Length: 164
Image (cartoon, rainbow, N blue to C red):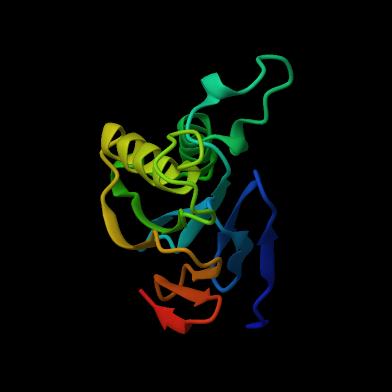
């Protein structure tokens, strides 16, 4: 049996799902939020790289659902359900949402914190518990999730590595 792991990469405003032993990864999480939804029994996980909090901020033509917290999380749940996952068994881990630029309190500049708030609100609305998070701050992150162990590995610029 082949036990080699494939690393599936998720781009900005993108989402994908993997089954163990494969792992899933995204880079460039500044103000963006990485949302991992997973079923620890079936060892399947999805990763969404959220750029903006609300699809109402985008043009309505040709909308990329993965770009926004509200539409992206809903779509990722649908992908996982299509793989046979019971949505009630889903758990989540989130990372990112840094405040990359310090321009005072202008709400349009607070993209990172607004992304985190929108992600949490959508997960709450869908009754998906957040098991761990590493959000905020002012540094970019790269994250990698292993559906076999349920561990989210986070590498933060100038701060090193941790697992949650």
